[in-house]
Amino acid sequence: MRCHGSIKEMERIFGVSYPTIKSRLNRITQMLDFVETDPAPSRADIIDRLRRGEITAQQALTELDGGT
Image (cartoon, rainbow, N blue to C red):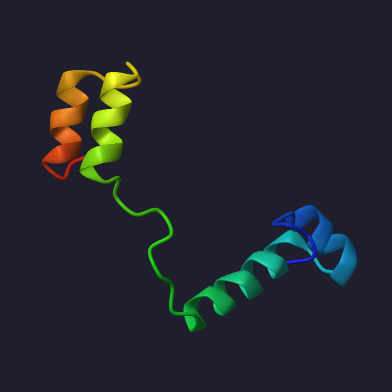
């Protein structure tokens, strides 16, 4: 948390190598129950993006059908 995801900073703070940090992080993540942090957009969000021209009609249809 203190390093805001910077593995380089974690290497410096803990005095260990990149592979060691990655291994430790992998062990930690295996112990945690994660919730979906990137949920599918709502229908309203998709329509709003379509109206703003951020996505095409085909992309909107694909997203509405559950694809990304």
